[in-house]
Amino acid sequence: MKIAVLGAGAWGTALAISAVRATASLSPAAAPRHLVSLWARDAAQLADMQAQRVNARYLPGMELPPSLLLTGGSGTSFDALLADQDLIVIATPIAGLRGMLQRLQGLSAPVAWLCKGFEAPLADTPQSSKPFGLLAHEIRVHAAINLRAGALSGPSFAQEVARGQPTALVAASEHAEVRDALVAAFHGPTLRVYANDDIVGVEVGGAVKNVLAIATGLCDGLNLGLNARAALITRGLTEMTRLGLALGARAETFTGLSGLGDLVLTATGDLSRNRQVGLLLAQGQSLAQAVASLGHVAEGVYCARTVVQRAQGLGVEMPISEAVVALLDGQIQPAEAVAALMGRDPAAELR
Ligand SMILES: NC(=O)c1ccc[n+]([C@@H]2O[C@H](COP(=O)([O-])OP(=O)(O)OC[C@H]3O[C@@H](n4cnc5c(N)ncnc54)[C@H](O)[C@@H]3O)[C@@H](O)[C@H]2O)c1
Ligand SMILES: O=P(O)(O)OC[C@H](O)CO
Image (cartoon, rainbow, N blue to C red; front, side, top):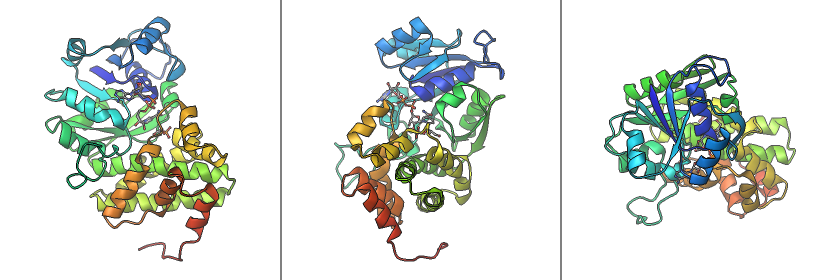
């Protein structure tokens, strides 16, 4: 297959490396499985990657296979890159998705995005017509309705995928040919790709787990204990599921890779940028300091308010996400967030 990956951050680079690799062997000299192009927005970063054959800014220490084509630029060179691809993968944060989809309008190749989150509400849109930030598949409806597209999601740290460590992902789309293209592109000896047609559930899971990972990072940074962490993860899964069901998702998706799977990984794995934000806030850093020290996007910081707004609009209770928003907005201190959650009235576990 010919595959173009648009965005040379940590995750786009890792998946590009993975798609080139034909076997479990990490030898850069092995024959490539697919013809893969990695497109970088930043000219200086592109030049550096071409010179060093490493993405030192976003995925240091991982050699780029010789057959991986490194490219950049816009205008006709961008159009030429897209002209004859079998799959186009958008590897930007959700903030860049709308612009990318608009540039891809009219293409017939399947398109997939990797971002997990809700788009921030658009500043120039009247409150009355579109008050909430959107999930990625909702952005597609607004920006490029004719594209056949979907999401590649699930529990996956870029560094582990680039190293060829065993990982399972989920290819989500209402279009079977998009799911099939993602499986054909990425399923291999070290990466299993499952298909799911519940894109709403997969995207709610991927977005909300980032907010919950901030909460568990905070919990662990405050040394509240393993009981507290297990409680946060479990009750977090409940509130994620409630929002998903209200948005039209299927319940089973939340016990799958993009629900429980990604929540466990991100809430407990120190490679998570969202968890790191919680850990740094617990140390007394300001949100600005925590975000600046990461150097990578932590989507939960940007979408927590939208998660809560959409839940409130649907009458869905999300107390953990609400506490994260109050904390990120500086309305409460970490210890007060804990007190607010523990001080809630008794409730039935199942409602
Ligand atoms: N890193 C991971 O392990 C991982 C795994 C799964 C999913 N994701 C998701 O993938 C998305 C990208 O994450 P990442 O880790 O690669 O981020 P990153 O911070 O490592 O890199 C982001 C990349 O996107 C580019 N970019 C930023 N804004 C852009 C815009 N408006 N238009 C075009 N390009 C833009 C940057 O130049 C950079 O190359 C996020 O939504 C993240 O939640 C990441
Ligand atoms: O580093 P995070 O917190 O953005 O998480 C990365 C992936 O989404 C984990 O699946």
